Image 1 (spheres, rainbow, N blue to C red):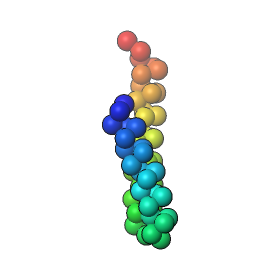
Image 2: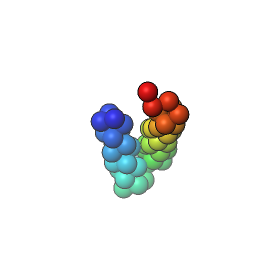
Image 3: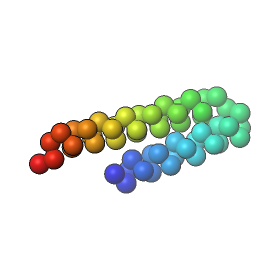
Length: 53
């Protein structure tokens, strides 16, 4: 949970850094990281909600 939050913050910071430096690599990489973290959170939430035991 904490790792996911840290990765999300790092991804958002990377997107901001990429926008400031006009670096497309930073923007794309950070967006992919953010999307991956969101997908993992959604999958874990879905699995937990289906089987809370």
